[in-house]
Image (tube, rainbow, N blue to C red):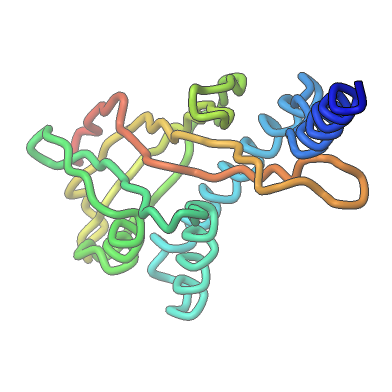
Length: 198
């Protein structure tokens, strides 16, 4: 009898310990907050890209913008996010985000005009098989490169999709709530429309 009670006590204790260790479910309200946060971060990324491309800005400003943009893509596992870009011949190229940002800063065009022609959008977060929550954020970008005379040499209008992940980084010890952070992943080109050169 004592042995049975002891075993029941151990099972109950382990169950309670497991309950404390498990992360609480994420409410729909919090998932909506993640979506809002994602859109704010996309807007930040757009601002950083505009600064990086602007050759009238100082190199210090542009380098600082690169650092801030890279922070949005920083993954806890150290994986490097990739950026897909459209090429002049109509093909696509994929390179690390850091390389893309540095290329944008040092582009061969004398002047670059980078604008965003529509509001960014994001899908709802959904739980994946990996236990994290995933969404896609989309932004719409106009790129125009000019020579020294102001003639546009290349231009395109591109829709880009960012893989976004909300990851639980561990519970707050004092309140038992999850510390969840949002990370940008790979960026893919979903549509490119050439802008005719003048």
